[in-house]
Length: 303
Image 1: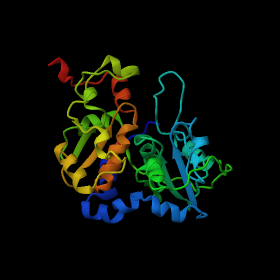
Image 2: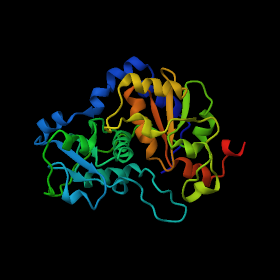
Image 3: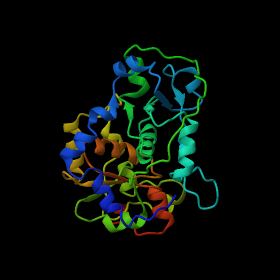
Image 4: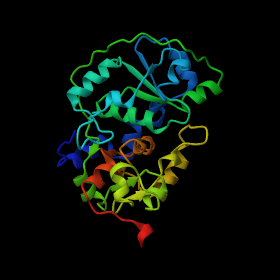
């Protein structure tokens, strides 16, 4: 879905320009839940628990009551000519997709990743936030933390249920190529490349269209998404995250515009940025879209 973003600047800032206000409205504590919290709320009637991982492994082992979530089930998933690998659905289609996985207006949504899956559940959460569903959190540490704490897993698959949603109130959380290009060096905005540094530096080529244009978007900074979580897969402490973002050139109050290969890895980085109070935008389509358009790139490997 491509949208006009002429007014996204003001809309994005309106989300939470002042860091203190942002932290009050969307504190880290509201974005994460512990295994203890989830264990106490597993039987809540409004809980929608979503498992993100290898589909083949879900039936054998998941948290009781968890439903399997495929990102393709909440994306445009267009296979036609010129389609991007991962792209947001239209509001009308997204509403139907969210209802199909059991989400209603009053749902309390918890998303967790299996094994070392960090960015796919983050993409799911970003999608829900973009759809205007604020009552969503991530299980800190995912399934591995749940098992490490000695909590029950099951092979019992819950029956499918359909939710009921009012018309979605979409949030201005997406940016297109033109907006990224015009804000790469704009005051108050920082464009962050969340891919591994080897892709940013141009020494490694990505898939599909990327292999024709190794490098990064001019003016963007590098902050690989894997840096925001610890070895235990939990989100790093706020002080550590703040230092990581400061090193990448992000200042207090800056709006962070994230991109990666196709718009998935960047959401893990944006999740961390949001936990620090930064307004966030995702370049939907990311470097795949940028390369397909033949826009300028910076390739340090060729300098």
